[in-house]
Image (tube, rainbow, N blue to C red; front, side, top):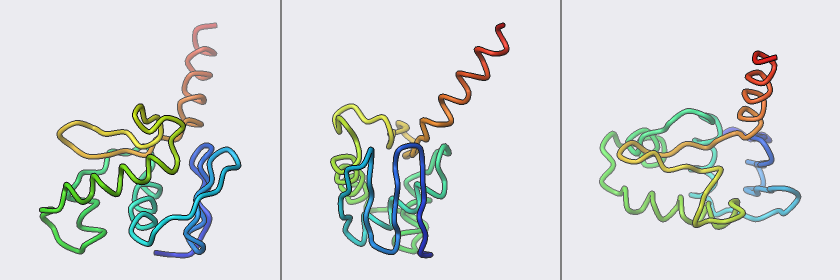
Length: 118
């Protein structure tokens, strides 16, 4: 994983330190949480299948550890979501996988739509 700072909406991810901050609150990540978040971050606003994520993490094409992936996603949600039970950043796409959403993009799209209506 390259060393860099990644910003997705209010999420700031320092890959070198393995830290993530949301709205100024900084939390340390485990090595595996960092890998999962990195993959989701570089693919922000795109649905990532369990197999794609698993292939990146474990270097295998068929993810038999989808329950283990769910655990890492749950841990990340507890660290970055305002309400982990109702995630707004790491979304589950049923039957497909996960997506890290940039709310900046949502806001930009809403502004564009509002401007088109005028």
